[in-house]
Length: 266
Image (cartoon, rainbow, N blue to C red; front, side, top):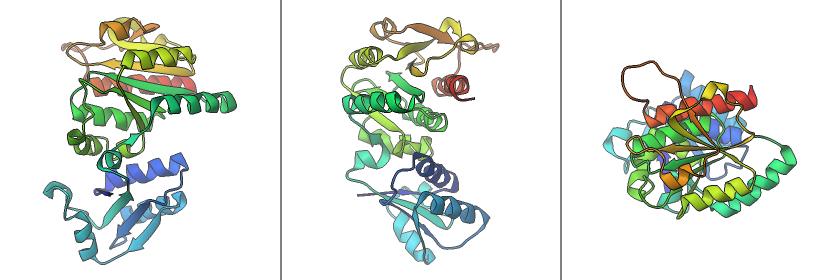
């Protein structure tokens, strides 16, 4: 089946992600009708990434978007199309956890580049999940781990996640696991250091984050589950000065990911 992406920003994010990944984009195509300044910029990036582009009549674009929700049918002269195997993979880059971990260990031993894994514990709002995945794309996260139960991971939510992530959910690797605690245990066995986000922890700006980092984010109402918190090597917090209790979980994740990225890459 096909996933169709509209909107300048969502298409730009998708094309930039392909360019950065250096993967073969043979299943991705761009269709455009008029070449304005923003479309021209997108086409240049797409060409650099190896994405095939086709200039077509406007009615062809209308045909491509006709099955989208009405709010997404305003293509503004450019549409990205991706061929996928099924609906779930259309909106998310689903990977098998054990296979990913084996490959990640091999890559780390060869290249010694930092690896960041984000664990989402009982985060049920698909808008938050999408926004988190968008931050994961921007700060080079290697994997997002989501539990099979009590989380936003079902097919009905995927369209919301895709839009909230500005298309990044199609590129950021996501693994859905039955036992989140056991998955984190395996990461620890592979040499990852586990940081749990919670109020009262060490200030994030003072932590020297490990090259192989796991960041655990809990739900805004309940925080990190007790069994998962026991797996955390360090509890980390974000210093704030506001009058309300805390940051939204997606905003907090973005702040912490920036700090991890800054420590390991800048």
